[in-house]
Length: 128
View 1 (cartoon, rainbow, N blue to C red):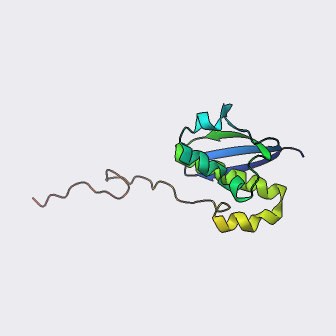
View 2: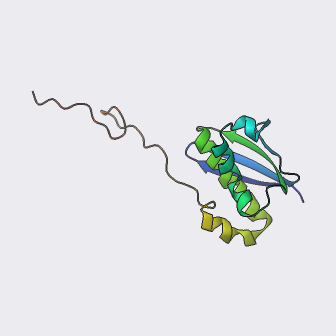
View 3: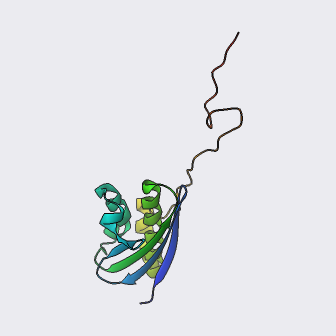
């Protein structure tokens, strides 16, 4: 099996993933998963597509992540891994879609408007 690559995005984060057959090692920006994401919750988020298909120990993953915060990066990785798994076996797509791993979450930060301190917040109104 050759390298399968896929891309995932979430908020401002972009994750590129390279999947090969192996023993279940996940390397992100030349660091192990548990070093890059110390939080066990984020490690779980990244591995969710693999747990769904019961192939945690089947593939080695090398990922490059850019932009965003740690939560956005973890969810971008999840999408990229799910897309790569579907490239390997298209019959897995319905199972991953049912869990919501194949949908790119479009929510992002709303831009700041001029004359306001934030996107929706207004400066205090003074009647007199």
